[in-house]
Length: 476
Ligand code: LFR
Image 1 (cartoon, rainbow, N blue to C red):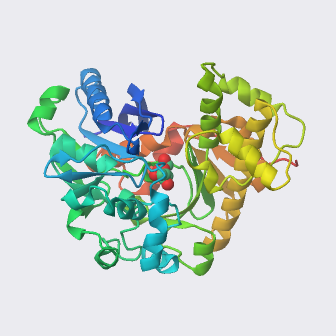
Image 2 (cartoon, rainbow, N blue to C red):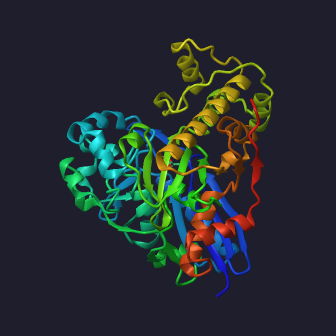
Image 3 (cartoon, helix red, strand yellow):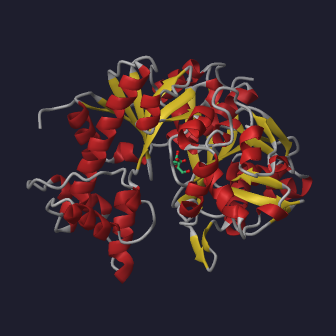
């Protein structure tokens, strides 16, 4: 077989998409065809901020049906999404809509978890940076008054979709590594940790690596989708960032990456984790990558700062033209505030411009005034945080960074890429924009035999298919 097609389901922060990827590694062909896009915003219910999983499943299966109509030869389906969120099941039944990680309930559980397992020990065990929404805290929040006691399984969101499609329950490793419950050295569930936290280990399904098959579509699902017999669901790097990193056309020994969308995930790819005190203090994470690589990175707040500000300004019914706002931001000549883009006060939805102004007021820094100044201040603050995280990643890992790859939607943001290159003093190569979908497609294509065996050959195919935009650093 020289080539074929697969379907990637990518559930992102504002929208979900179904994309058909056509891959023929021998011919150097890698093409994407977006067949469906549907909303995936959180829903605020009386109990808090939730996924609308049922609506999402309806939309994504409609999208998959479109995919099979357009390309009847689709060999498999892979699902990715953001990390840490999960659904609880009793038997086959979903116990309520999953919580969204931006819900504030987690804050209450952090202290409780750290009282039992202090953070430095937790870090030695799971290698994860502190993020108040890591699943371990979400599960602890679920212990009092939540549904955990009723559940007999817990499935991370892409695995939950995979279960609905096939009936198979697994925990894909790259995403499971973000729960806080997988040992950073062992790559296995940390049952001892769960016991100490009073969490029931039997809710956890078996771990599988990217490339593993979940089996064929359930017959009823295949009929609904108009899918031919034998279409499988394949575990991909189901953590969206893991898929994105697969598609960074980099040489890991001399490159850093920034997977820039809602979040800016800034780091390097390593063979071994780094769990030193210095890495813990810098809040660097060791997430599981495809093929056993380590995603040694730091979460920077990302374009959320801009998109949520725009959403706030638009709440009066007006519409803001983003490219125009960015052009105005690029034209700002006054010094704007550079705030700490990692400040946790920016995590929850709401009045971000107000919170940025408050951050500035608390520190006696003049706050931005116009919307253009806010946008410029956000871009400068992100660029500064990106440059700082690249420097720290390099120092902590020993990788001598000569190139910074920016992938994801942020690769389209010229001002951000340019200012990141300037502030880091290192060239930025921007693209591909669709890195997550590409990584999803490539891992499936490899499992089906359409693509090369190792990450290097997958990345060579990306490099041959997408031309990056280069930004040279210039003096400020
Ligand atoms: C990016 C991402 C990050 C993760 C955050 C929350 O979409 O997956 O990697 O830290 O979302 O899950």
